[in-house]
Length: 256
Ligand SMILES: Nc1ncnc2c1ncn2[C@@H]1O[C@H](COP(=O)(O)OP(=O)(O)OP(=O)(O)O)[C@@H](O)[C@H]1O
Image (cartoon, rainbow, N blue to C red; front, side, top):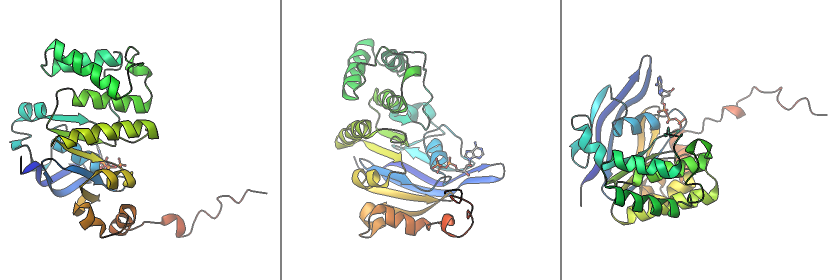
């Protein structure tokens, strides 16, 4: 399938005095692995929340697989999977119960849900923890069970906000492998991350956000222009090395 999996035009989000997103256009081709990067406060979470129908834009339009997110929320939400930042889950359920419950909410038949849940628990290395309450899960385990819940209905587009934050290298490898397998079948992934090395390794396209705007976007090679992504990122957003600009003379002066 050709065309845009996600298309945004003129997206703006104003929170009282803060302009979190200041007019963003995005085109995410179907089947791409798309990274959203930017410094803290650049507007990544706000953008992802507006793209996925969780937060109403102050202005602008978003369509996913051809359907307008805000005009047709039920249709679009059925076609996307979302792993939000800080994953709020029904954490008094066990991991397995959470997946079965999520599958029911998604309208899947009990047999299909049970089979998919077991496969996801296995692939994400959560089988041993499957009967423990999600409340007792570590950060990495919460990300993984959140990812399983987001994939259960086999969405066309998967949105992940900081999937690798607080995740150890083994779990990060597992999450990465599942994402790669998912895109290999022609589905689309959009994720935000501060881990440039992973964005560079996984993504074919990237958008760099700064202060609520897209300051660079395109194929990784275009944006990096032969440099490692972290170098390109620093030169695009400007290394704001305040720590080297004086001040903090007192820091470390108590030694000896
Ligand atoms: N609910 C809110 N009310 C007021 N301001 C908000 C709200 N949510 C976000 N902001 C502000 O909008 C701006 C963008 O925040 P956002 O969380 O989208 O950035 P981010 O790129 O995801 O940052 P980080 O990398 O630190 O997670 C910040 O200035 C933030 O303080």
